[in-house]
Image 1: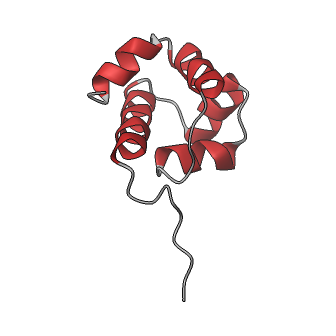
Image 2 (image 1 turned 45 degrees about the horizontal axis):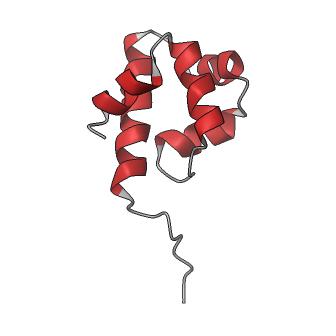
Length: 80
């Protein structure tokens, strides 16, 4: 039987990942550039955008700082 992550399909993670990706693309940043600017591993950034990782508040704050957006604005964009 295949293992299914407890995070799989979590609507909040999907919404945050989508909001991060959309904002990153609006800013013209590659995933790697954003990861470097936010001091996050590139593979972890990809996992956040794909809703495969449960992003912490500290990392979310770093990402928002790199995107030049307030965390509250990103969460509003995610409709959370």
